[in-house]
Image 1 (tube, rainbow, N blue to C red):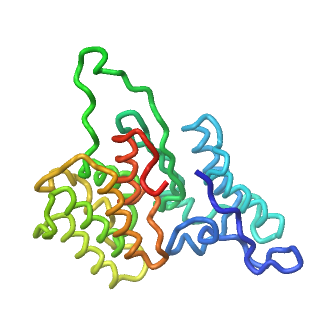
Image 2: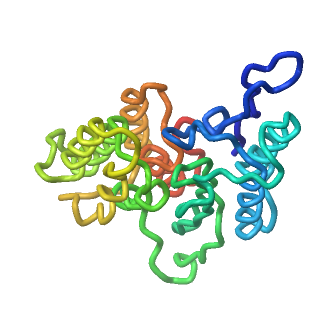
Length: 267
């Protein structure tokens, strides 16, 4: 997975006039989007990537952050030991792993917002050949629970609510919203969040999707049609026509990739 090349805000005469911010190179929002990428931020992400992968990832978040921080420092807009307060805070820099049958999802985040996500294959015993039971397919409910882990700190917005509704309808086989179910809760959360300024106090995806399997009246294995429907719902309701890295659509698409053993929907 590659990131955008660092942009140069108000680049005049080959020199930066403003520091490159997180919002210039990553799909982030709120306070983090307006923060300059500092050298110590990049160093912490490099250390986190190295701990998980054994090295930094080419074109990954750490490499993108390092390139941006270097440009900011050369322009004299940040100091060599500077660190962004969001990065130095409680949530800081994180590289988390979510294990799924045959794969692991690695999610990189800063301040609770996802910067990038990888899917890496892991060895799986061929239980069928050994006379055992074959691994069952990943369900829509399991994909929603994975979202609670990979993007749980994201405040619920209307694109999330639409994607959750599409996922619930496909899992249950009904177009009716279940009273008190995942879709109804997500819609209420998005409406509630609309009335708040900043992310503090907002309802997060983890609040809605933790224990999703138990909250669904029915569940089914995720298929390509399911993923395409969820992706379309999330895209239609996002003002920038983007899906969120590690979000509902991305998790259902990842489940389909694992179930079918092919490229994810939309690839």
